[in-house]
Amino acid sequence: MTTTVLWVTVVVASLASLGLKLAGHRVPEHWLATERVQRTSTLVTVALLVSLVVVQTFADGASVVVDARVPALAVAAVALVLRAPFIVVVVLAAASAAGLRALGWG
Image 1: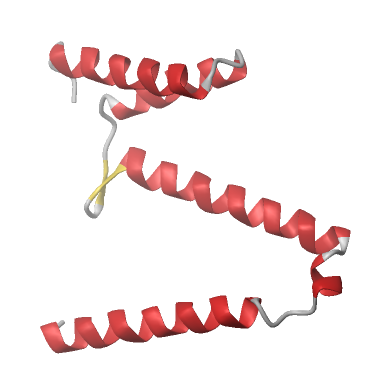
Image 2: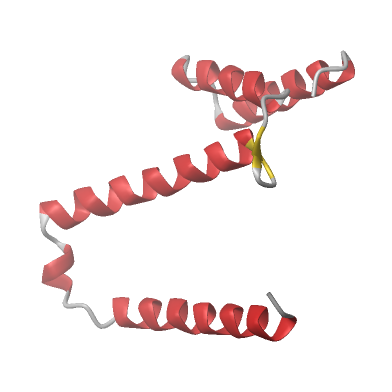
């Protein structure tokens, strides 16, 4: 892929994203008030966040890796289940990943 093709792709994707955002402001409000649309928008948000977490945790370029990020994610999940405050979840996950990396894993 040449640099020109890459930049054209980035600009076209950016313009498409801007167009979708602007079109979202033109949607009649009563369309968005239905239960089905609200439930779907919540599920789409969750699905996007989960996919981002999975890609950032298990991917390294084009390969799948299992390193210190995986147990750190498990620690964060347990902390969330125990209803820990968000900052505590982040600190526990970061500390567990740092500890495992200090021990030579990942």
